[in-house]
Image (cartoon, rainbow, N blue to C red; front, side, top):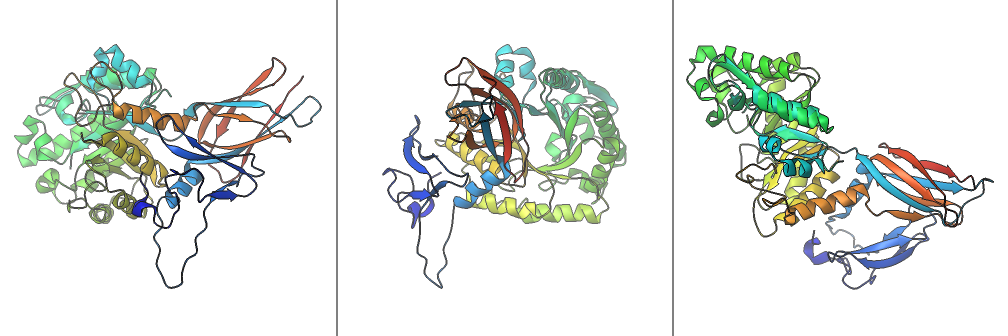
Length: 506
């Protein structure tokens, strides 16, 4: 991210001129480094305390307003996603061991991060290997949607979503339920692109077939990937099963009730979220036919049928486009308020699809702050960036922005592949070689996993660092003896410094 206002008062904001303008904060040593990709950064070492860092002083004038950018994001990032850890190594006599070599390997990250998949994954081994190198959360593309599962009245068929869900289960992938109504591996989370959607699982009334989504869920479970349920109902008239569109209005309530109970009971306990009423800020198919309180009714029913999964609203343009007045943050808050007034007071999640062109990051941040006032869990559910010259850069900026915001509970990207390619954003080409977006994703994962992190204990036997929340394998190596110790370390969110003590018995 380039500094705003060309750096403003900050001297040498992009570190193009070494350490010019920057001085140590605390007792520490500063060094200027440059990564292979050209990114320049400052390294602090020989710190006497964990607060050792670098600074730049400014003299501010009274009665003038100043704008701060980026700094708050960085501080928030460190506070909510990482924790300080102090390693101590002693010898067999309990004396500090100097120059002990410490390496850290992340086994599992805590922050939920995933990508959508389609049924194409069931027939392509290379696609499976690519996905399993990264995601553990998922959502089905269309296979749970009503037009997929009930293509004729009463003809319910969950075979597609059943197959996909079985795939997810076998790979330990959590599934978001998307949708009921439409209104380390690299990834531990996923969502099925279409396989749970009504038009995929019930192509005729009563002809329910979950075979595809079941197989996909089986794959996910086998690989410890968690799946979001996407989706139960969709409020957009274009995506209703064709037979549902032909139903008399008096028959629609029973059809939606059967749909909800069928898919949600079928996958109860196997998905951790449900997109219950999809895109009901932009559309009102059910409200126009069943009454203004339809969304509240659907959410209440969803919570009764599957109390293990959180029911979600899910919509687009809330943080992507200020010009879309249907789904502004204020409109989203109004919709939640209306649902509460209509009688639904159970658990609820805010789903933000996040289909971006050129992102406006200050607007994104302000919108998230506004939505966070609800204290409800917020998930980025379908993140992508349309094809454009800076697509990979924008994707990187957005993931960092979301990851740094305390109200964001997880990120699912919308980069599933099919025989026709991807919708807006692919991570690889048809031969599964990385595109720039794939490289951007890999670079983010390397940072989150602390790849290449090595440390050396000081004269007092200490090494201080900060780690992203998750589970780690830590190895301490003796510098002269052929001896090492390996321990598991869990980094839970906390303001307290975590201590890890090692003793060499040589």
